[in-house]
Length: 268
Length: 284
Image 1 (cartoon, rainbow over the protein chains, first blue to last red):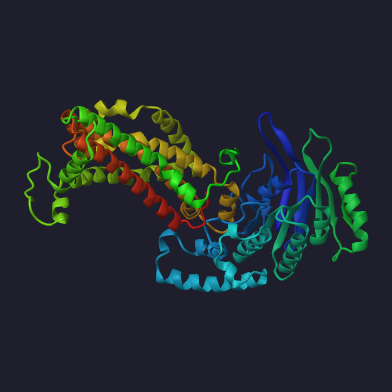
Image 2 (image 1 turned 90 degrees about the horizontal axis):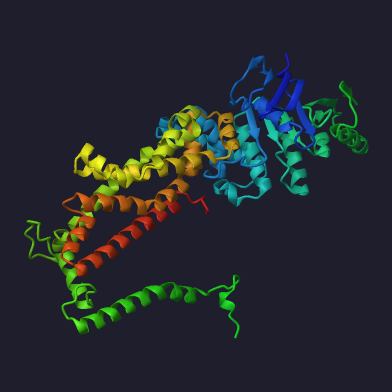
């Protein structure tokens, strides 16, 4: 059984309704790294929010492990492009927030057990800090004292600390400079290889999608008035050869612009 | 001559800025005593603009002697004992107590605003009513409050709460709504429950702004408190000012007004320090 099943999902907003997604079907297996590609406004982030459970489809259903989820929960980690960290918490507190909040209720925070557990979690968070390339001293900083790249590193560590089965990343590296972006791509790829987490990664950058994903989904509209559908479902060879990149990039970009159609799964 | 100091890009030096910030105070004091001096030359009994000596004597009496209507018997003793039995201290204590009760009653207002902003059903249940209530002029309710709650402390505290709470509720509601939805979704994905999101994520983030909002409302709190005290009270700073007005006691009224301003300034400064200490991450 696929881990994520997107079954004939349509989504529209506003009055009169403006269709964003139109009968999208997709299945994602456990352990895959799926990149969702498409032009601005094609519904990539909407699709991600539907999988997250923060929005609900107008038609169709989304199943996680065969069950519908009506609200975000800790089975699905989330790294947005902005506001990914809690500004009032230090880096370490941001990373340990997940386990702390799920293990201890609001009124259990003053017990000795909480303080013992907190100590253990901080040790684990420090380990994560090293893995994402930050120092122990960075642990006591507040998010606004970090660069954009460092903030996203911490956001990834924060999401992975709760060991979610699925990690949903919404244009997580879009605001970063090219150098930092490459670093972050290497980091997320190595973290994914070291874990069994399934990643759904939304991006508008074709190179990024091909470098990271084991599969690339292209969302595109047949006409501006219609909702987006899956225009291409492409299994990417691992690793994607640099020599093949330009041709693939051209193909994917023309599909995402609606210039070409390829409804079937393509295996290269 | 270049008038560079009037330009947008002008940068006042540290000393210059300090001096400039005190100029109006100095001019005000000088102008007051100059006019007062001139009036006293014409009429040595003038009570409208008391002289330095009259004012000093008024302050001395207010800060070291009990009120005439007070039966306290501390004519002798050290300065501290006399101060704590004085009219000024007694009035300050009475006003501060009411002020404190009012501030404590604003805590439920903050929590209501938070819940209205986060929980849609609570929001739709209360929002229209609070918006309507916010438009009612609190002072117009004063007679109703006196009839309903009597002329005791409760009516005065209720006046302040009714006057300020809707603004605080709406401010907190708007601040809650301004927290990026990504933060709320993120908290859920990390395992937080509804109340964790409310108290461990949203309230913590909006708290510095809520405190700033309350700071901005301090003057309104005092305004309603003074209205209540002036109309129906037997003690308090505003009661004393209203009482002394009948006797043209400007030598005490002016120090009292300045004392109230100083107290309010200290409360505001204290809240700013607390805000900065509790929320080092917050930058306006």
